Image (cartoon, rainbow, N blue to C red; front, side):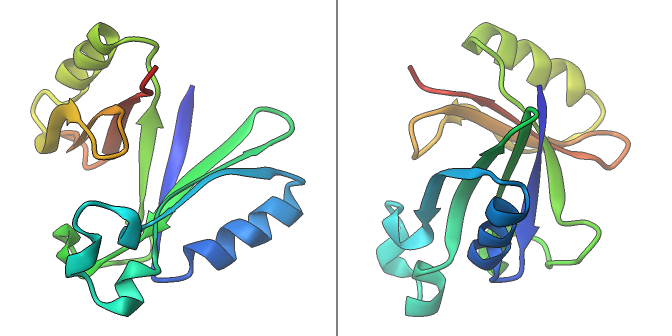
Length: 138
């Protein structure tokens, strides 16, 4: 399954509450930047922003997202604020997909254990598409 991952300019919580109602969905996860290990280094405004949110809705719909913070390395721009996410069943498949799809692209986060416990990596493929590979922790 490929899941869209959408970045917002500080209104992810509002957007996902709207999608929850509009799609008759359920918010499964909502984590704030202040809850991360580096959260105490952020401004009070950034601490309250969404680090990760997951919504599931009938018909196999799944959306994920977060609020963009400037330190993330690129300027927020509508139209370039999404990634495609793959959730493989095991680490070996995660590594294989990451290695195959990132050929000729730019790796932004190598596959590694993420602060939220999953095995995670990010890259931009040679066609300019942002990808995330996320194997959920057991």
